Length: 112
Length: 111
Image (cartoon, rainbow over all chains, first blue to last red; front, side, top):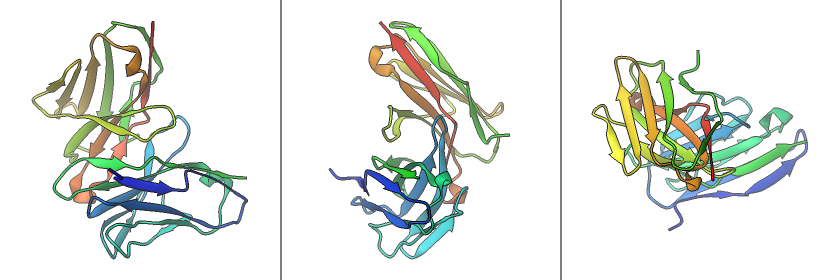
């Protein structure tokens, strides 16, 4: 029962480096989301996708990019990492017929 | 004003206590309402959906008042295992189904 899988689990980046956070789901869900969670805060939406080939900005998209070439995968790209991007990143997916989002286990990113 | 606001925590209660969490939301067009539970450094997991008629799941009762834009969660006979952060979540499916999260209220149940 894989569900939503995120890799890596942890990562330390230097300022200015780039990386891609991977997210894959095996539930054939159309909707996928990327959130970030800063300490003591709720989750904030970065980007979302309603299907392959379609993406849209969320609440805090600056400094990030996404793509959705397949239904299964929704990678999040950081081009020039900044200390303000230190956070825990959660990917989620949802079936179009349900109201429930399923979350991955998260990626803990530190930018030093 | 935040779109979803919750009681500031933490709540520290003894085992067996009843504890209530409150939440308000600002967007009257919101369509779906949830309580999620998040354990330390883990992903949020759905605890229960919230319906206008009120709903109960064992020791947990959720209420929604659309007129007041208010959501509540009541936990009865609290257990040590209930210790977690409880997130009030609101969704408007005209906006791609994105969830709007409150900041969470931490609950610590002590022996």
